[in-house]
Amino acid sequence: MQVPKNLPMTTSIRPESVPEIESNSQITTPAEEPAGAMTFFEHLSELRKRIIYSLYAIGAGALVGVYFSKYFIGWINRPVLKALADAHLDPKLIYTHPAGGLNLVITVGVYLGIALASPVVLYQIWLFVAPALYKHERGAITGFLLSTVFLFLSGILFGYFITLPYILHFMVNPGPLFNLGHDVTPMISVNEYFDLILLMLLSIGLMFELPVLIFFLSLFGIVTPKFLWKNFRYAILIISLGAAIAAPPDALSMLIFMAPMVGLYFVGIAVSAVVTRRRERRLAGPAEAR
Image 1: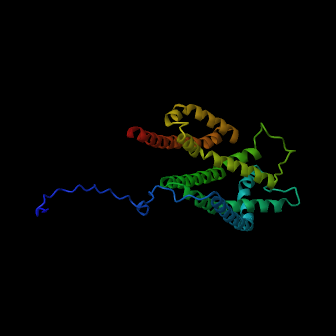
Image 2 (image 1 turned 180 degrees about the vertical axis):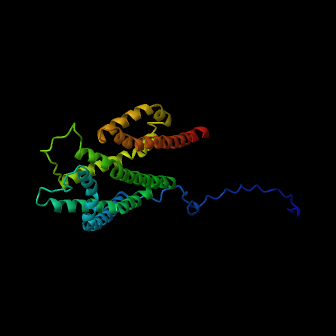
């Protein structure tokens, strides 16, 4: 049998090449991914480390605070001594317990230690929380911490330099309506005075966190800028009642106390507007994608 020399050529049917699957080594984590996941025991170990570092910082700050506490006590006592001198009274404070002076020095030192160590403590909290956050969340948390500390310190400074002198002046010399007569002389305990000042300054500092409170309420959709503006008159009423309770019962003191709170309320409306706009934009994105 003779095989022909020139066979007809046929196009061979070759299977189409299947695209190769990218190897896992080429798959990169998006920039917005968190830094990584840890096991439960790794979280506990990390939390333990951050707590220990924070306690070290507070202990070191307390040692420094005890050393400088006498200077801080003199600074705290200055408003009430001035109020006593203005009322033509003996500008002195007393303590009624044998260990009252020592307790005050240690207490003030511990509070100063916490204040001095607060940047380190906040940084340790940040190191513990940051790995679980996205990049945009880290920026939001940083701004939140900075604004919270700034508002709180602003409230304490406002309370000490503006509100406190008026309140102490009224307490020491309340006028003829509340005057108990010349037979009753105030002998103010330095320990009780410090407890009162601490409560007052912390309360005013927390009241200055009003924009932060509005931020959270707006973040969860509980309040909106329209709602805050519509109920502005009721907010003024609540602020007036708070000023009447916290400030001495005279018009000037109430206005001095009300002015920053009204300003912070307007700041809260602006914050709510920004948060609400971003929230609506974020919710509208998936709806448009459908």
